[in-house]
Amino acid sequence: MRAVRFHGRGGQGAKTASRILGTAAFLEGFVAQDSPIYGAERRGAPVAAFTRIDTLPIKQRGAIVHPDLVVVADASLVQDPAARVLEGIDERTAVFVNSPLIAEQFQAKTSLPGRLTTLDLTDIALQQFGKRGAISALLGAVAGRLVGLQRESIREAIARELADLGLAAAVIERNQTTALQCYDAVPAVPLETGSPRPIVPVLLRTPTYEPPTRGTAGITAGPNSAIRSVAGWRTFRPVLRPDLCNGCWLCFANCPEGAIAIKPDGKPAIYYPHCKGCLDCVEVCPTDALTVERETEAAREA
Ligand code: SF4
Ligand code: SF4
Image (cartoon, rainbow, N blue to C red; front, top):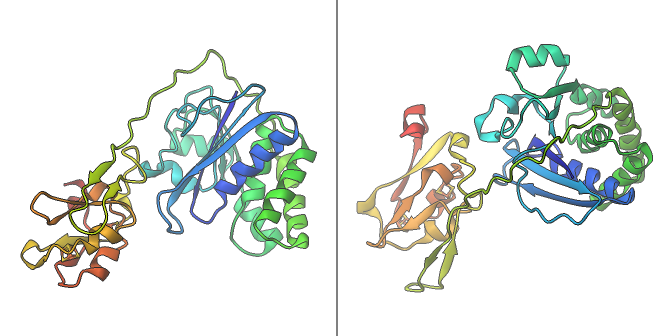
């Protein structure tokens, strides 16, 4: 089994990179599985994607807790606790970071464990495409190189996955050419899986059932589960003034994060670790019972 975890920010293409890797592995006759996990629909928010590759049927599902390879699309994520880049990394883990620093410099700066490789994919993309944007093909190619897949399967996988996204043939070809340059620029790092690593059960937040006392019944759960707090994303937070609340539950129904629960008295309660600060609840509140306050570190930690 090869377990690869991608970290990126919304819009950088980590999910597509994980698909490219999985498709390339599939083209070489492996069993492959890939899945993303999003924090929210916001550009720039940390996202992760997972690819498992094996010669046998893959029975594991969900997040990869002990990766063999970690691919980081944005160096700033390494220091961001919300991104959880360091989770499960040990000295055996191969790590790739998109950074202008050479591996030794980056390692000294961050104390990253693992065997590190770097390449400035953003600069390469700027030179080749003339703009910042998705670097999915480049990331996928580097990951393919590091897990030992072949050039031709990477090329074909890029064509398939980028065509699915509706990109023009000329753009796909440019991505393929640039991605394979990145493939060649990264030295292969033999992955060491050693003895099997323990499978750590991840505790998910238990869904709650809201009885149909008003409207329809609802089943809610923080879509990111208890393993990921989005509190660090807020610049503003919604704050309830209970005396103005008429108990209409519009805020509850509109919260995209399932961060609002209804208390026994019928009034809403905001669960701040899962509130990303989109302020949709404030928008829909008909009585101005939800106000907006500037986020502070003290409030975040309370
Ligand atoms: S701001 Fe309101 S709607 Fe947005 S996540 Fe937080 S509680 Fe939910
Ligand atoms: S939308 Fe406003 S009035 Fe309605 S339950 Fe939420 S806070 Fe109360």
